[in-house]
Image 1 (cartoon, rainbow, N blue to C red):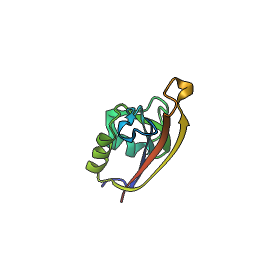
Image 2: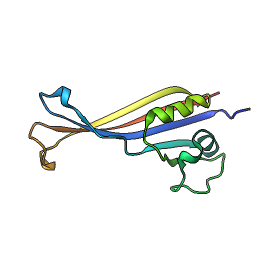
Image 3: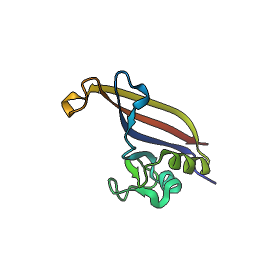
Image 4: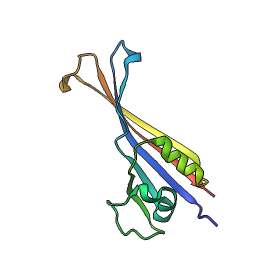
Length: 123
């Protein structure tokens, strides 16, 4: 049988929106998708696409929040979790805003940054 448990997927994102140009939002790609959960579950789901370099030799039944994926497409991560029998149980996102002129942007532009987590579970 398959092990039960949860895996959390997280990522940071950012985008710029001008005051009057809501349709002109400029999104940056996801730089890194992080993985938190039991090592054995993460390896089962993501296999060779799991980058373990930040927490090598972690015992299979121990938790880690230091893995990340070698690809940066959330849909690919969600597909792998779904194929392994996981279902999304919760998600959470937070964001902050900063004005961009100090980075050389137009005076009305704002840079938004966010951190989002998705929790997937399997019974």
